Image (cartoon, rainbow, N blue to C red; front, side, top):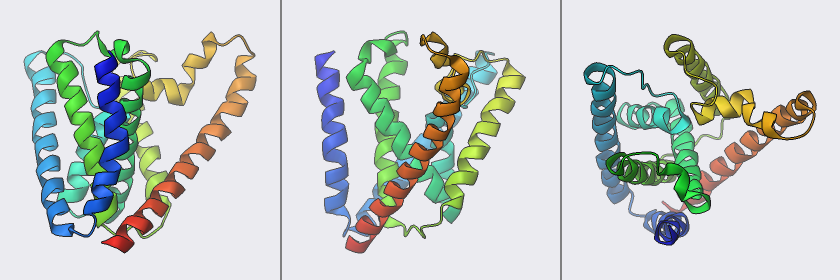
Length: 223
C-alpha cells in the first residue's frame, strides 16, 4: 500500500510541473493529448460494450470520471470549446481526487479484480494528464457558464441512468455527493447538515472553477 501511495503522491506533484514546463511545446502536447483521448475513447467504448452487451449487466457511465472520459474525448476531437473547457475541468478533478483516494485509502479499491484495478489507475492518471494538457494548450475564455451547465447536465444524466438501471443511492460517488446520503452516518441533525452542505458544495465548486480558469491564464500565457 505504501508504494501505491508514493506513486500517486509523485503523480500529483510532478505531472503538473512537467506539463507546465512543456507548455511552450504546444505541438508536442497536442500529440500527447490526441493519443490519450483517442485511446481513452476506444478503451471505454469497448469496456462498456463488454459490460452491457456481452456480460448483460447494467454498468453504465454515470460517475464524474466515467462521464469525463467521453466528454473530454469528444470535446477535444470535435474541437467543441464549451464542452472542452468543462470536460478538461471535470477530467482534472476526477483524476486528482482518484489519486488522493489512493493516497488516503488505497485499500478501498481492492474489491476490484487486479486487471480492472490497474486499468482504473492507469486510465485515471491519463485522464488527469489529458485534463491538464487541455487546460494548458487551449485558451479558456473565462466564461463560467460551461462549467455550470455542464455539471447540471452530468447530474441529470446520472439520475436518468439511476431511474433506468435502478442504481442504489450508495452505488456511486455522484449519488453520495448530490443526495448527501453519507451525512446520515453523522450524529447531527440531517436537515441542518444539508442546509449547510449544499451551499458549501456550490461555493467550493465555483472556487475550483475560478482556480482552474486562472491556471489556464498562467499556462496559456507561457505557451
